[in-house]
Length: 76
Image (tube, rainbow, N blue to C red; front, side):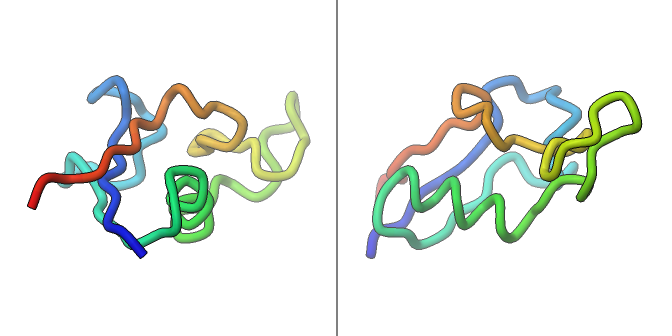
């Protein structure tokens, strides 16, 4: 497994769950696995909003928006 750094493309993105941290480092098999693990650790609001009652589509969700999260292999 490799280490990956995940951060929002836009530093002011209101969906980012960790206000005092600019990135999260975690181990994963690849970039898609890193996104999956991030989503499992920081899930969205479970049922969205009354206007958008879909699972994993709440205000804090990066699910389905792969371009919003940057996944990079950090330098040693």
